[in-house]
Image 1 (cartoon, rainbow, N blue to C red):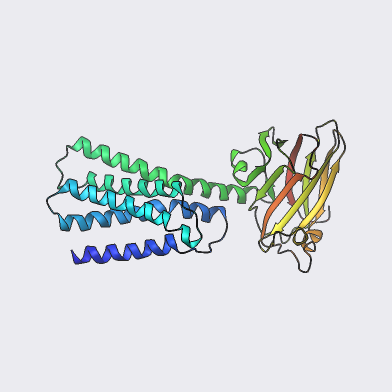
Image 2: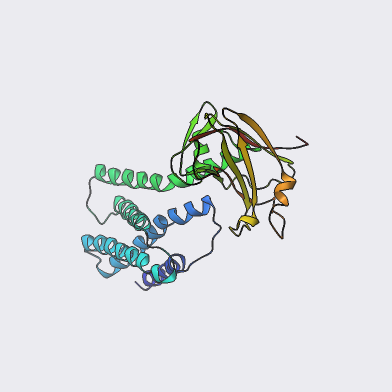
Length: 306
């Protein structure tokens, strides 16, 4: 029993460090998925430790063992979320659900192979399949983010392709609705002010390229004023600390806008843009009100003088 206690204490310490300390991880899509998905395996290990301790404490009371392990893990999950508020982090129902999911997967898998429980073979097989389905469900976000990064790498030096649903992973609308159609991105402005679209976390290393090319169209019957914004990982969120360029399109005009990357590099006041770590490209309507749509046909980097 002493070994079970030592393992449980160590896991509780690890859980406290991971869940309660306000770690400064990179603000990337990958780390967000890792942070969310990590709850399930962590609580799976805790649940197995709890049932190991309970088995040593009540060796012939299987129902009590499983009940204690499930209840202890659930209470710990709830407390860990509530305890994050004083250290400047937000309690999350989603994280708590992932804690319960990890607990359920672990105990279901354990029961499938637990010879101290009298279960028919069919029931054990069903439990094993349920646990396996849970593992697949937990792994899906990691699989999806891996595919998204592979896609981002495959299309480079295009920053967006507009022909694959994974393009939507790397962009988000702000006051705008995005539609992928015919190899283009249709952006409908649905709220005020300054609606648009941002390509967050593009392929970050732009060194070795000379131009950013944007093929953009104004399908409206009135002119539209757009602003292109680019910033790097050192961005202070001040206007002067990024690249800003206005693009005014006449009614029904489609234009290929070529932006020299030297201009981007020199844009921040008092420093140079880190061209090896670009983190955001945004295109938005920079007038408080105006036309309701823009169409982006291409967004790519080019070498040589354009």
